[in-house]
Length: 102
View 1 (tube, one colour):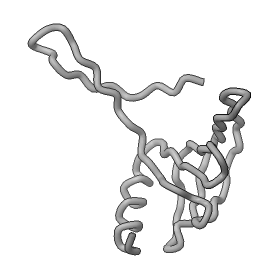
View 2 (tube, helix red, strand yellow):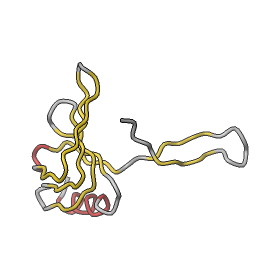
View 3 (cartoon, one colour):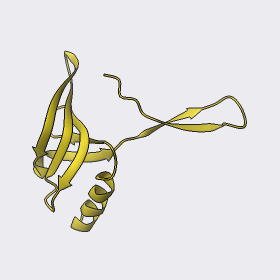
View 4 (cartoon, one colour):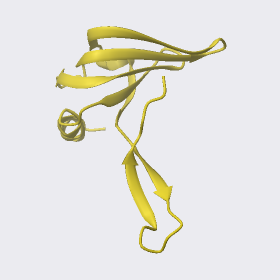
């Protein structure tokens, strides 16, 4: 991925209220507000929450403000919206924000 593509993607993500970051550490994600980034994809995330999916189940921990080295990131995703299909013809497809269950 080129530097321009990374910069454009992260510039869009910084405007979102929350991002989801997959780390190279086995089944570990971070969520929070993207505050800053640089050309090496090093990120500063405010109100970060670590989410780990392991053999013992799902665990999460609040971390506060963290700096993540770009080399340890697999992907950065913006919050998704779930699609809900309604029964009526008037409202065939509704959008709603994903609610984190935790």
